[in-house]
Image: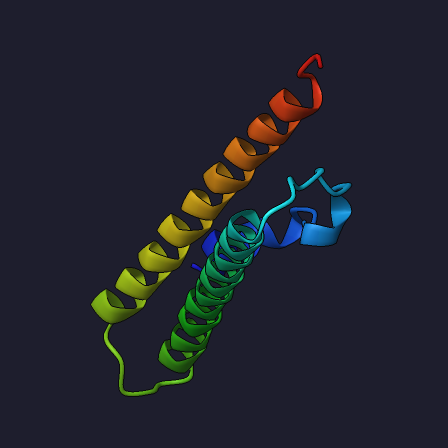
Length: 106
């Protein structure tokens, strides 16, 4: 069962700093929206990472004879897997949108 979570460890890490910055229009509304979105995205990434860590700890706990059922372990692994797959899709959509904005002709 450890391969289900560990299989994603080989994916390259993506950071917000890996992309060049987009030009931001002047105005305080655009700045507050981007800060809100960035915070939301980083919080969600943290939650996704936490779910993965929790699933891994539950798996280790079960294998060492801890007081946890197989159903609980499988549920935590499925939650972590779903969260990771969702974040990968969000990343893909963000990259598509970024490429589309970059390719806009002025």
